[in-house]
Image (cartoon, rainbow, N blue to C red; front, side):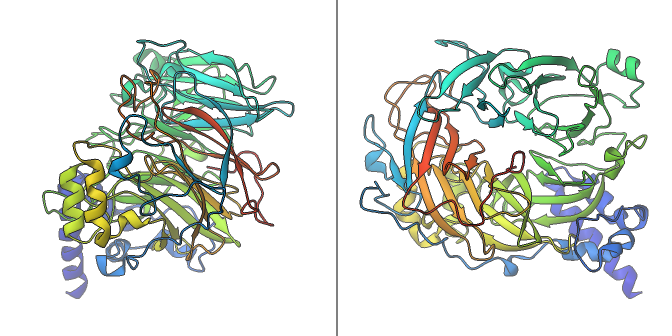
Length: 563
């Protein structure tokens, strides 16, 4: 009787948690996971002593996958960077651009232990940035917005950054997906591929574009621009997928470069593609909201894949604990077994191992699996605060003493069934008692302002450093050698532009003094002590660490190990 009662309670909890997001099917799937998915593969990379128990986990264990608010970390900010005399440090709270500076020509930028080396502004930048070295040249790639008005060039920009003092644009990629890949632009070093899905304005078509960057990375060579999931593609490859509906938004390569996982935020599905034949990509499956052919339902923004390809770490783009409806938080990330895809099983299934609710944020955005001193962690990054991305959400979060703006977190995943948050990259602006001094900065605006978007590390296999684009707080760099006690060591917040950047997602048509939006992943180079990144209005930046703050003695930046 006790066991039956516990199951009923769990059923109520799961269904209630996800009803407000339309994820009732996911709750049902999770409740069935322990009984139905006895075949969850043991992951050799998981170091949990009870890893074998994953395969036989029952429904009762699911109740422990969602840490209650009482287990949240103390409300403290990450220690501030120690700036030097020649720096131009922040004048307000950590992460703040005060209202008085948000006028045309008013914000000249902040920097601490990071100095500008060079810039290539062009038409500005969009959301994402990737990179590759062919042995002779160091190349950087970034996307631009789909807007065509006032443009000098369209598509993905290729930068030759071999000489960081003089970055040179060398190519503009304008195949279907590259005109607006949104956040899907990625490089796979092992197979020397640059890839993206069509994601025009965040919701594109069925194409995936693949380029060869092995010969001369300054001039990527188009291999294919292929529509997957169409009736013609299904007929050619015999793909057993009912009613495929491909709409690109984000995505990621598996580390071996044989699979590209595309995602679409709304309706929120994941669609893995076999790219072993780069001329003829093949859609393998789709797991998506309200699908009749899958019990797994999700609203997924981004994801990452384990080194052996058997685990996916994907986000649930949900609401936080200060949402306007008063419903329970649904913001989360999931650890899943995707070995069916990795092993090319017919009709591959996604098997949930754990789901972790994150109530003090919303809009879970992406993940990075890392190891620190041999122990496994996952970096999880939100793009919304506990109340969402508008004035009502920010003020509600402040009233509830929850963080109004988004941030990155580190989770201990030694026991992948029960991830535990060990630290947050929280700035002073995100402390409730500072709300009254920070909220006025954002009067009359909504959407992305302060807070996190994309992060990168120096080396996923032995991480020492985390660098994140925090939108209007700029580029932030953290020492994570002690994952439970990170420290900020540097930042660079670029000046507001005085003329619009037509390829930007931020100040595209006017320049009214609003700070730039630094949103992309960042390229750390330990040998040179450099950081390469894009911010939307200012385009490409080459920055150099100063005052000996980085690299650390153990910092390394091997190719393909940043994201």
